[in-house]
Length: 244
Length: 338
Image (cartoon, rainbow over all chains, first blue to last red; front, side, top):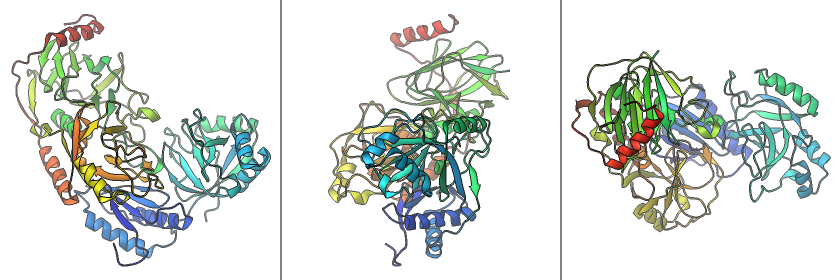
């Protein structure tokens, strides 16, 4: 254990990955520290650092131990973590079009029933909030979002529902998500966006990063179809607000 | 132009390079070889970069024919049964496939994975910088899927040699399958000391339901001290997570980038292939090592691969008759050639 309070814990995941743990819960302040360290290492990566994987509460650093030894990496991390307590890099703010109509928002009625709200209230509340991208995980381009209004915090399903369509907007367990690749899921599908957060053939394949914020702009099914057509040829249909 | 044509491929035969690196932060699985050391050895023997594109062969087996021009290949598949147009060869062998010749690789008594590398380059279009196949997200390889009969893999810069097949001398692949080295953590503190000791004592039986994503272990269930849910964090290849039922799962090449179960230990890099090669039903134990020991093992592995493996003449290889009968079945796919 380090002497200085507030230092992250350094946990080994084998000899080629180091977990820098800032906390054990989902907490925006913890996420800020994770992302600040991610930025600092990304701005000046030590040779031998191969990948940085931010999560809600920790930053996993994959490294080549024959190039970068653990002690050097650990010292660098602790020095940067001591200085960086706030977010340093500019974060992008995105507006994603989202269609909540029943053909896309397959589970809106079910969420409404569980939350004791009307379907319209579910949609209005979801579309009014601003979300933070905490991390990606689970599947390609699966973005975990914080900022879901408390009234929509229904638990996830006890057993998974059939695969959701591509680019689903989902909620569950107090979080929101954008899920690009169809999968069975325990979350509730309340809409879909024509914006493809992940498109392997497009350059860049990803445009929303961990730490960015997202708002959803409600569109109807006809607009969805038109935008989806444009997005399929690689055209961006998400809008970017001023950087904050 | 030279090409390898797939005559037969069992389930789980895929294209793999060194893995799709740099996109874990977007949820993209690295994939890459199940046995990184064996994959690199095959590439070294074929004269390519250690992380070059090669064919990963499962126990489902593979038969390939050269087409157009001759193709020099290095096959590293210890324990597998190998034949060139019906003539038996050792499991690790360098040879030139003349056009029309068929190399057949079938599961033997041991070994789960083998690798076929070419001199020159297997011409597969990279996706996100890599040719590695991840079938669950349909990325890489040929349309993100396993190989199948009729697939054609062009070979750029194919080399050929008039030399007869030669056995590859790869002593570093004679690995003890039973003792897998691990570094404890990152969540070993979710288990009481006696449970960590029980984990290390084992033994654990490798379940037959494993695949490229995970190796499931059966044995005496471990008890968690602080529950079995954690807020998701990153997952390295070889992470040993313990879900609610207490039976460890080792996350392998096709693992997800993050996960939400406590991870009691991580298999060290040099022993990933050693574990991957263990067949369902066999037992393993784990042995705790320090980071320094793991790095030393990694350095030794790198040194083994500095030079191309030595080659020696092939001595006669005998097969049981059931294997030869099986080869005839595969040969039927190739229009009775050979």
